[in-house]
Length: 467
Image (cartoon, rainbow, N blue to C red; front, side, top):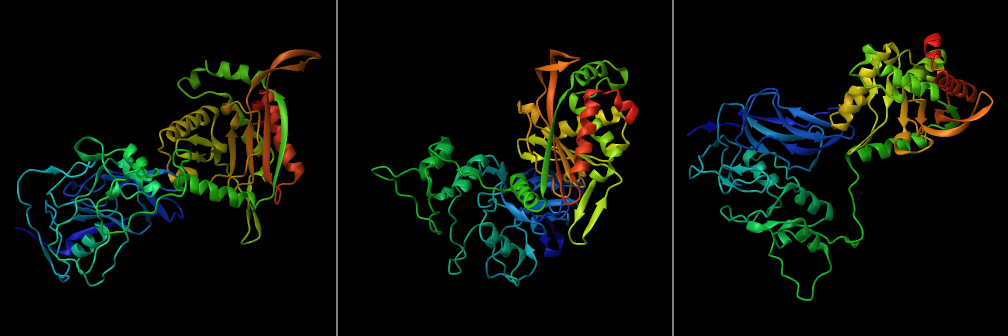
């Protein structure tokens, strides 16, 4: 028998993994209670308003408790996992409600075997040890850690409930089904399972919110009142909670659209020579194995235009009533990912050679596709490119990334009839659109930047003479 003290249990809090973030959603736990962890080991993956991030634990020990299930949104600074750093191996049994805040004695669970307790979550040390259910947190300053865990991890409790009362088994369901139930406002305790071994399926959850049949099945009694049934037809509509990247993007776009007075200018150009140069560069030995595309030359053309017109690379400081001129370019590239639109940027892009820019673009795109873009990679951008042409769109009126003064939209490159050297010929043509903040960028400056980018892409040899 080993005696554990509360001082030996360390609480790891949700960190601010990005600048100024206030919350994050727990996507996946990589450990379970009873697992041994070491300093630097990744214990979970969380999604912030900017990126999916893996969190390492900062000390050695044994996992005592996971305070929140997967899918929970947790405020920064809130403890999410408890780790015993004393060297113990097994999780202690929950303390009684009347126990004082004294050292808790660890008890070894009966039986040597480990039994599965929740589909998709592995096993626990005993049949009574369950993963915490998300519910209203109860704060009892004078209660022991174990009592707090019992109250906050197992849903609503009644003060008058007998200390030894048997707990109702938690419904069996896989994590995606639990998330669906949460989104639809369905209490899984009220759902009749149809899967093997009493597992609740997606169909069972949908059936729980469908119109009742002629002879409805009576749901088992629960301690908490049934969850409200959504007031919409789930067969015809799906409601998706606004959170994570989508929530941050919406707030940023509304803030930008109604703060910075946008002006958008357009130009349609012949990029046949640029497309030929792209094919030539793909054969260049210095660029072998790197990502060579029209976007590479468009990015380089924009960097050259910024060098010739540095006033476009600035931001508006409302608090200090100042225009902040940037002497560096962190070039943002808008990327559509399964998690939503993100805008990572290439740091100090103005200092990079063409091969270095190609390498940075390749890393940025592959990282975004894998969903591994870090919050740091999306901070500090100065000017952005959005390539709507990949979707077959001719152009658009892009909204500024907050804190930036310009964004360039690139349309689809198509073979079109074009007057070339006095004759109508098929040429590769595209349309560029430049949006800028009219508080600090006048029409003359914005026009010069767009015209410079267009001139370079029509005659890409200017990349050499103007660089």
